[in-house]
Amino acid sequence: MLPPLRFFFLLMHGVLLFSNVLPVLAPDPGTPRAFSYETSDTTSGHGNVLFNHVTASEAVSFETCSDQINMMVYAPNESKGRRLASPKLKKNCQCWYSVQPLDHLDASDRRTINVAVAVIPPFSGIVEGSASWMGFFYFDFGGPGAISIVDGWSNLFWIQRLMPNFTIVFRDARGAGASGPQSNCFASMWEERLHKGTMTEGVGSMLTGGTEAAERLKAKWVAFAETCTKRLGGKNGVLRHLGLAAHARDLLNIHTALCRHYNVDLDTDAGRLNFWGVSWGGSLGHALAAMAPESLGRLVLDYVDAAFASLGHMCDDAGAACKLANRFKDTYTDVWNYLFFNYQPTVEAQYRVLSFVRLGHAVLYNPNLQLRKYIDQLLSFGEQLKQVRDGLLHPKNFLSFSTFDKKDHASQVASKGETDWMLPNGEIGYASQVIKCVDTDRFGLEDVSAAGIESAFAKAYEISKIGSDNQVASWLSCLGFSSADKAKEKIPAPTSPVRTRFPVLITGLKRDPIAPQRSAKGEPYGIRHYERAFYLEIDFTGHGVASAIPWDSRYEEVLGRYIQKGVVPNEEVCKTLANPFHELFERAEPSTIQNERMPDRTSWAAWYLRYSAGQKSWLRYCADHC
Image 1 (cartoon, helix red, strand yellow):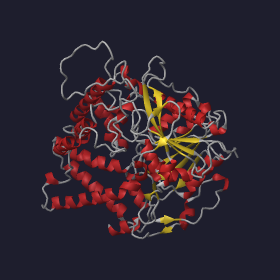
Image 2 (spheres, one colour):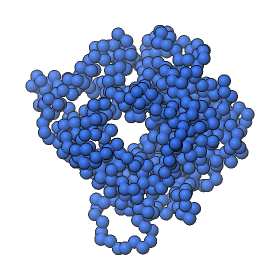
Image 3 (cartoon, one colour):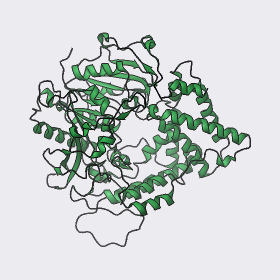
Image 4 (cartoon, helix red, strand yellow):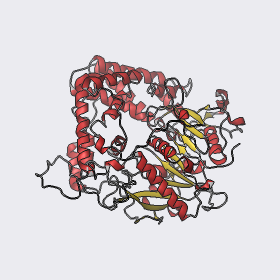
């Protein structure tokens, strides 16, 4: 058994020149105004106000976190699913606005950014630097562009239960949330919201619109890139400083500063950098491993098949008592066939198809939270279709999806002003596309003509009907960004497997429609990148293991033993079974896992149905719809 050492957790998955600016004609009102990023006080990443009260500093200087924390930290509640955590957390959580260079590679560039950092002391009550303290644990909840601090607070109960002797550190990545530089391609959050709400208007879908829809979609994304580069790009812009390497250097600097503040030696076990990254955070973890492998502790990685079929699989798992799975599949197929066989060659009809598909794709991110609502919607669509066939509903009114309300938007702008509407965990807009695109050299498209785009879409469609449109849209979103606006620092791909100080544990879900864990041959992607790695998988559908919270106790036990004691599985690839309907089942105390092997299917027989007070169970819900 390995000694109790740290671990590194990675869950997969334009500015104008400041001088010599020539006079120009009045800009088109529809064109965003370029901003001059000169100081870290210019703006947060995306109009976020969570750290407005915190004074920025280079050295660690803690201040009390926002009162908003008391509305964002949850714990399980037997009757309602979750509850607000104790208000005392606000007294323990400390916030710091860390001043970082905008350009880590050019000391002559004096521009800086403020990176928002939230630190929570060990849940066990031990003191940093004591003998039983295990170090700092950093989390990134992906996106990129997600408000990681808010996501961290929301999941803090599960994080602290898994690692009670770690100091937990959340931070918003540069260009996201409360961290600068500004990554909004538009002059205000309202302008961005309007663009995002109307982005797909008049585009249609390649599902039924073919090359014409592909051409319209490409034109939309190229125009978006032009808007971004005019405002954020150029030699002295901020786009070139939003790449993975810059994010990694921010983390390394923050970790060094925290160790210095608590008098922790970087060369000790407690001084290793431990990191948990969700989705894009997984890519950030790989960057850290490539840039500074000796600085890291334990390394755990969480990186689409025909994923939509797995929604039916989830209900199948509930057993013979639930017949909803068959009705679910039949209803979906019925609506799908009607949309295609009764197709009208209009953009509005294409939008109807696209909206139906995207509705299904959205639920795959976290079926635990969204499957019930989606089933209700799907069954409602089935009832509407029956009315159409009975002549009680006009076909044009079938499956009507609302579009962005421009009048309501204008009214809100007039009444609320430019920024008042933004909540601390408000929408991230296009931050995700901007941050990803500066690191992207290839888009998955060899031919970027309309025909080439449609051909790529057809291949994606063969893999998954429900995810094909989203896959191609993610490729197209980066087409208009030129090489001049790509990340200044690139991280070369390692020529051989990375040697880390400790073995790597990769963990993920069996069916992840956003970031698949396995190749077409069934081999876990992450293992090949490291000299010694293990793969731990949950039989579940969703994006990242965070979507499977609350975790099955056996999975949590194996993971916790690795984190806290350094015990690795005996097998390189391990599987654990988890029932997705958590509010239904509970188990007796898990037996000791001999040799760290996963239990087989029969060991789950001890699970039994539970009906919590005031809570409708999944099987009861399924039975109601049979």
